[in-house]
Length: 397
Image 1 (tube, one colour):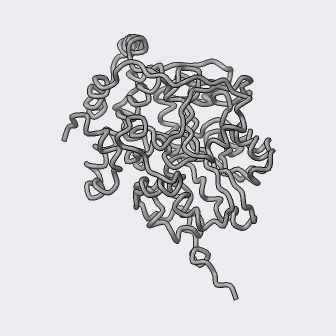
Image 2 (cartoon, helix red, strand yellow):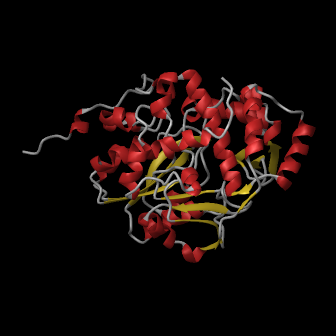
Image 3 (cartoon, helix red, strand yellow):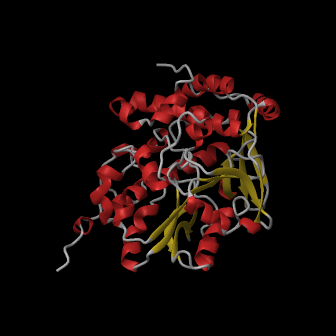
């Protein structure tokens, strides 16, 4: 007689019920399944264990004395890339969707965990296990809201799938790695995207209404390397708003507490990361962390152009100046914000230095948030690499 696995004896938490991480819950979806049995160990906000899980996932943790690994995590190679023939409707050129489709159609995996949207709301996430290229393409474009990707974990086990690709962000992937051995898979591939500053659906609406001239027609948006937020609208037009013109005083509280206390911007535990922040404008940034990541990239190598990563400028003065500005909710007049944006675009950090600027800015902010709101968590919750990055700057009390 086969004994029941411990997690199968557990019951998913009911919708709306308190989560173990309380206000820091990132709604990753783990607690929506019987894998809630492992939540105290697996949740990124109850048990930060990036170093240990890096060793599990990549056979080593990052080298803190290597400046690239300190910031960007374990890696075999980094590059800038773009598809030769972009996928229509993709947020960028469609590298993430292309990798997923090739992995599925070549039989490397039997399903792909990705996020579509509900029929009634383009920004409301709906995690699915895609089994066709069409289902993968229906998930293209980022959903800038908290998404319960791991809510499909029970379906994976019940389906009998043994080879799976999961697309997700850092908090989801840390929980996934913590329960990976319980899933009964023969092979798990993880394609990560960098992630910062997600919001609830209500928070997203406030951001759009506060920032865009036409919030009801926004298809997607991104904080880009030219220090502007790019909003794409239904008619194909691009609206650009300078970072420095954002109404910080109205938006300081819009981001989820989990995002304000997160230190895994670069998705450290994925096999491969596809984002934009370390690449020149118009290109995407790829970090291959291990052999599974290389295998995924090889699936699309004939479909993409690549170039070496570059780094230019110095971020540190800009970061130091931004710390008190954000802390006090400073908002510049739009004319000044546009002027500053033009100047910084010309002389400011680019490539990997821009990526470091973004990481530094968020880590210093998040360190202060954690220190002020959850001081009892500070020592254990902030990874060593994040402490080293934050130590470069003078922080207010």
